[in-house]
Length: 309
Image (cartoon, rainbow, N blue to C red):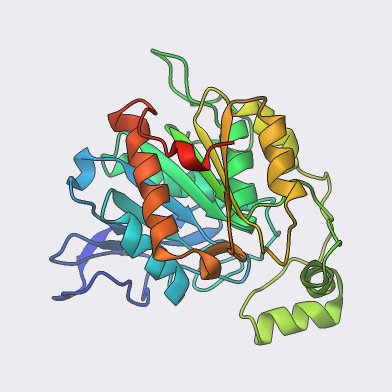
C-alpha cells in the first residue's frame, strides 16, 4: 500500500476512489483500498475525531445495498466524528469494493480488515457499529474475534476468519436493526429481500438497479447466526438498538438477542423508529456515539439508563 497526494481538499465527505493507493487530504482524512483475508479489495475511508488517532475509533458497518458514499452513511459518520475517529468501508459486492455479497457471511472478513486498519492508524480503542446486515456482521465479528487476554495478541486465535491479522477485535459493539436469526421471511420486505438474493432475476435487479453484486450460491456451511454469536461476546460491552416500527424485523428479534446475552447487553427500543441507517435520527446517532465513548471514559457508568433493558 503506497501513499500519494490527492490534491488539496477541504471537505470530510469521501471522494471516489481512483486507485489502490492511499489518498490523504490536508484535513487528515484517508481513502484507501484494504484487502480482506481472502483477498477481496475493500474500499475504506478514515475521518479523524477530536482527539486524532490518540482517541477511540468507531468502525461503521452499513446495511445491505449501502456503501460508504451513501448520504445516510455519511450522515451517521459525521455525527460519530464529533466524538471519535470514524472508519467507514464498503462491504464486498457493493460500491467500489470487489467480490460479491454473501449477505453477512464473508463480510466478517471485510469488517476485520477495517478494524485492523483503524488500529494500525493508532487508535487503541475501537467500537464497531453495524446497521441491519452490518449489525449481524458486528455481532459475529465480536464472537469470532474476542478481546485478547492480557499480554497476548489475537494472531492465530481464530482460524480462517482473521488469518494473518492482529488486533482485529472490537472493544465495544453496537448492533442497530439487526436480525436475530437467519432465513426470516415473516415480513413483506424480508420476503422481497429473499427473492432478490435467491432468484436469478432478483440478483439481476440487485446488480443493475441496486448496484449490489450478490453471490449466486447458498451458504455452505451456514454461518453462526447472530443469536448464537451474542453469548460469545461478553465481557465486551454490547448495545442493541431497534425501532418499534421496523418493517423488516419485529421486536422479537432484538429481545431474542438481548435474552441471549444473559444480562450482559443493553437494549434500546426506540419509539417511532423504522429500519437501520435511514431511520436513525441525529439524536439517536449522537446518543450511540456518546455511549461508545463513555465505555472508555467512564467504564460504562455514562450509559443512558433511560433506554436500558
